[in-house]
Length: 202
Image (cartoon, rainbow, N blue to C red; front, side):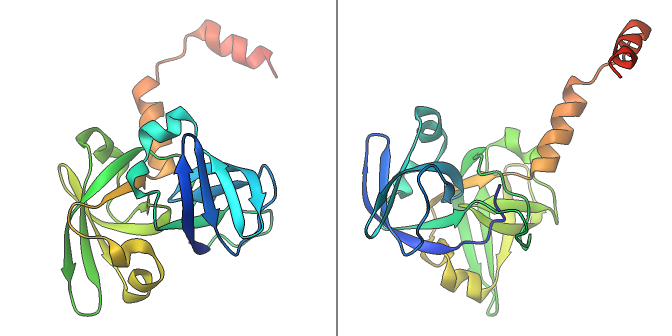
């Protein structure tokens, strides 16, 4: 579990096969979970100047692997007792979005991101979303896109400052919205026999 607050912009040393090697000041332990551009990955090697993580075929098929170069967002998993300053992020990427427009408002930036239509129900106005692992608030939701407002410090301290029209980003929608949607889709009325069975378990 993560918070969506980026710990460090690490540098990609190499990405080959299922291994991504990073140069970073953060020192994880073998087997630790760490989010790279929002995707939860496991540390498989510790180097003197960083570490390596492994990407399963499932992960490689879901995330924007074209961004595994230059700088990447990193966030270690939460520990018991840590403050939750962003929102609950699982590190499970739902889809890849594309930057449609970045509008400079003077003291902030409006970022419009296109998203596959089937994921729109999980994106809630004024709700939370993780873009490349960054915890953000959704301002508007459209038929196939969303609008975020990014403040200057976020532009400066994250990869948002490098994004441009056409850039791809990893998207994790709000966990609670996904759970509610799944429940509503699969709910059914319980029969008396099912109720009696559930009662017998306690």
